[in-house]
Image 1 (cartoon, rainbow, N blue to C red):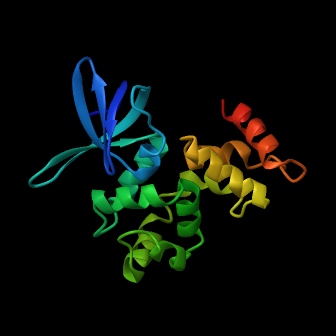
Image 2: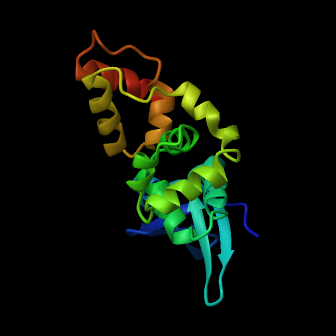
Image 3: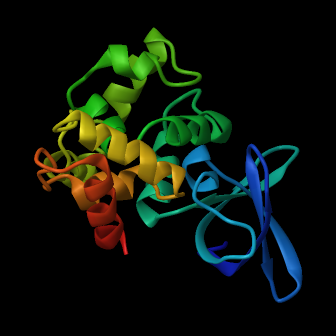
Length: 193
């Protein structure tokens, strides 16, 4: 029913945010990755998905269309409901999730919230073909950071409120080996903006 909401963030909590649009506050359940990048008072576009169950109507919010698409793909797996799907998206980057599914890495998948050994197998079987469109994430982003500065930089930029997936995408091919952390941070901030 909803495609996106564009408005001012008026509040956020552990599992949801409130966005004001023309004087109406909409509550959007959201993964932790979006909650870590919103600031009260900022204007934001949040992609939305409405989920209707027997006793509840919920609207979920996402930073990107890809996150929303992955949420819907996750929900096609038996016993993975909206709460588990949101938990998964909030605990791992989209690229690492896709990489774990495509490479059939059950160990990584069982570390996700709400996913045991059987659920990990179901994710692989049910999603492997469906996540082919997301493989750009695997090609564009290295699985391991290039240096300790690289990992410190990712951590610092997430503290500034940037989405980890976006950070990795923007700085994946930059060589920071001859830079101090301060130089790398200044350079990366210019790249992010």
